[in-house]
Amino acid sequence: MKSALLVLLFCFLLASCGEEETVKTEEAIDAEKTIQERAEAGDADAQNSLGWMYFWGEGVPKDSTEGTKWLRKAAEQGNAESQYRLFLIYFHGDGVPKDSTEGTKWLRMAAQQGLTDAQYCLGLAYFNGDGVSKDYAEAAEWYHKAAEQGHGFALNNLATMYRHGDGVPEDYTKAYMFYNLAAVNTKAQMINNLADTTTDRELPKTNINEMKKRMTKEQIAEGQKLTREWLERKAKAGDAIAQNNLGTMYNNGLGVPKDYTEAVKWYRKAAEQGDAIAHLNLAMLYQYGLGVPKDYAEATKWYRKPAEQGNVIAQTNLGWMYNNGEGVPKDYAEAVKWYRKAAEQGDAIAQSNLGNMYFQGYGVPQDYAEAVKWYRKAAEQGNADAKEWLKKNAKDKSE
Image 1: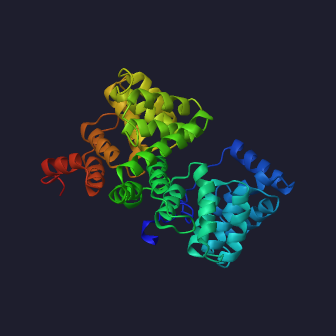
Image 2 (image 1 turned 135 degrees about the vertical axis):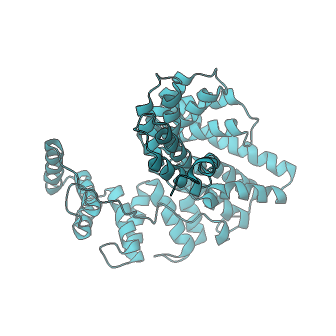
Image 3 (image 1 turned 60 degrees about the horizontal axis):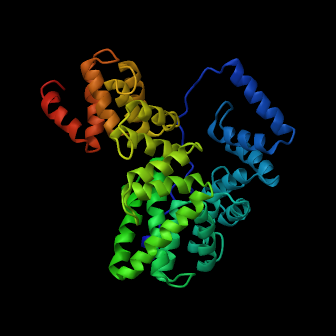
């Protein structure tokens, strides 16, 4: 069963950020003082922020011990985010002795307050017996709590438990439903840069195909019906994540007939609530004219929010809009800006496009060496356009 469970990617990760020297503005210094003063006065939110600042060295000297001190102060006041962060710290032993039991203690507090990632992590802890006694029934209970809040990895793991009857009665129909829900939810999480491995992105889809081999047509139909009803219940109650995911079901024909108009309807409801992934999905439908008339200006409008939040797909597509003057006035410098943001995050299409901008001298001074650099980065990820360009252009000039 373990092979079918999604390993926690972002829950168990304290990524190292690049340390850059920056010149602080007076406003930044004042903001830091304000946070410090509020933290010292007992403000739990400020204590949480200050603790994380010390952990990353943002505006203050990097000091994990000092960071843990402030996070503990906030956690002891019931701040769920700090409780979750303490779990991560103890689980990895970052600045403290590694202690999964102590970490799980804080994790439980955060989970009991409804923090979705904490609920998922607690389910995983019970499943693996990390810091607690192994208990499949408890694992299923916490996965279910996280699943109710739209956590894609929790949905996948809960589906696997129903598939094998671990902690819950074996039920292929429910397993199929939860795998379907995981397929749309996990896709959204992957797009939102919480994880990016191909194996984990494809796992729910793989599991769906495996389930189909074991199920009757009647069971599959019932599973599809349950999937739609689950999302409709939450979407009609105003849940933006469910609205986005229901849109994705209609967009891709997952358990329902493919219907772009219906997809647009649900994406728009989620986007109007500020859901960044729904912004991205709605933008793509406008760009390609699916369910709505093709409208580049409207697509550009919806791409902007996720692009500003760091989504590489939105950044690359927004760069393309400026590059080609679609929906906005042609602006090569602006195109370069967005391509670069996505390229520096590793997006192969953006890297290839940025290479072309340097090769052509569009929006930047023409620079052959810089063009080769970005084309090579894209080619190393398998980008066909970059490989073709290097084959034609770099062979004789790269030396």
